[in-house]
Amino acid sequence: EAQVTQNPRYLITVTGKKLTVTCSQNMNHEYMSWYRQDPGLGLRQIYYSMNVEVTDKGDVPEGYKVSRKEKRNFPLILESPSPNQTSLYFCASSLSSGKYEQYFGPGTRLTVT
Amino acid sequence: GDSVTQMEGPVTLSEEAFLTINCTYTATGYPSLFWYVQYPGEGLQLLLKATKADDKGSNKGFEATYRKETTSFHLEKGSVQVSDSAVYFCALLYSSASKIIFGSGTRLSIRP
Image (cartoon, rainbow over the protein chains, first blue to last red):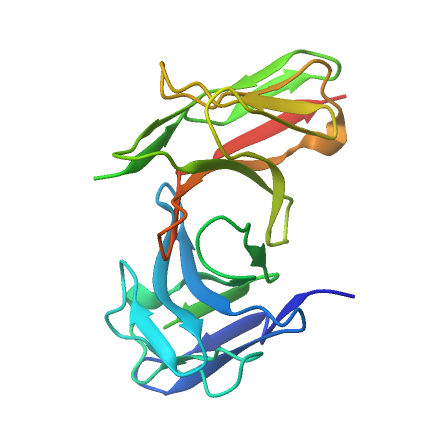
């Protein structure tokens, strides 16, 4: 089944403790992206990747890192999480950027205390 | 800059009512337009899309027409069901762009 998977689905952590949220897709998509969803703000892009080893900042990249060493994986790294990073995070992929629709993972709800 | 504006929710309707969720956009070029739906506890799913002016996207009884003259892409359904309760996002995407721009979402609740 074609899908985007994320792990973990739920995470509660403390300020400053490094964490990684994994994202994997099995559709051989070139483009992958991370979003955060906050009430009243819709989805905002954090980082994106046009292809392996190519990543770039989105609208709200501060406090996040990403890497794209393989086509299928695009982990999101929070080196020192803070409470303002409490949010619902979505990974998405598409065949390429531009005209192709994006496929979303199920989301990761992160709480930073 | 480019943006998408949706009607504020929540929208509450009775089953079999007619649905309209308004979406307008600001764009400097000619983007593709999308409606995504998010059911409780799930990620976003593409509902329908239109890639050029006057195109009509349709799926599962929902329709939206790309209106360049009014910069709108309103979502409609003739008879809603309880299972349509979800959050709906309007979005735009340029063929040359690296990201999709989402509206803030409209929560729809359908009463039996």
